Length: 281
Ligand SMILES: [Mg+2]
Image 1 (cartoon, helix red, strand yellow):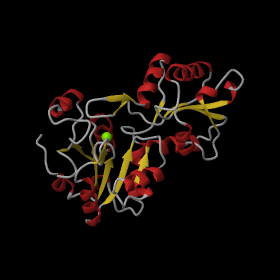
Image 2: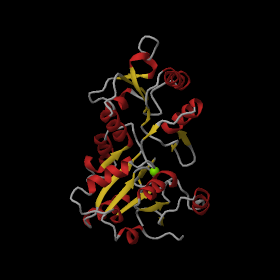
Image 3: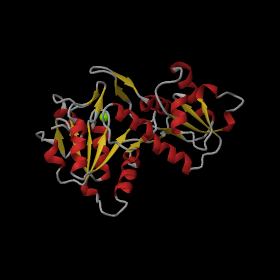
Image 4: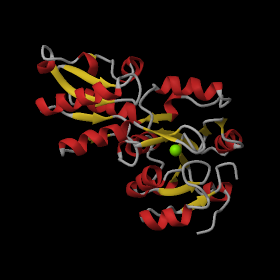
């Protein structure tokens, strides 16, 4: 499959779902030309949603960050995070008791605190373990990797409560050549150890796509065939879009390198409808 210009690919779609990291921004800031493209999409009347597997910040804080980076027109309604989906789940399930979490208190305040009482995993002990109603893997910082991951393991060995993964990503890039283990990778370790599967939020799972679709289609004018998902990662963005039944464009401005793209597609069997160098093209 040859790469095409993004502007030619996006023409026939009414709505565009954009992954954030590796598509709009990277560790340097906004990807060159991305801001112009987003401006052009708006000028052409296309609806935009940004779908991010980031459970560490509210949509409002994400907007602030985009604005600081120079994307002035992004509004809160356009941002859909995996953290929001995890929060909706816990709210609609009416989770009883304290919600234990692995992550920073700031992330817990942003994502979980809305009529829910939370407790950092380091504070779970023999006295309060029976009052815990759910365990949430929220973020990859804000805890002691040695002690607190084991605390979450032991909590789930002792209590039959739902375990929620608010960001399923297993790794995230920290520089051009290095990655760190992300929340989903920590959860995977505990899942494998316990021999059970947790409840995952974030791409490739369908909740964020469904949320975007319901919003975009509020006036019953958008069909799935009118939507293009754009992402840099095959097994989250592209697999998620493909499973949801919308068109997908893989961009080579992030996780997937130009030199590896054919091999990666062949190895994973995850086939995007289009390949573009970046959204700037
Ligand atoms: Mg990405």
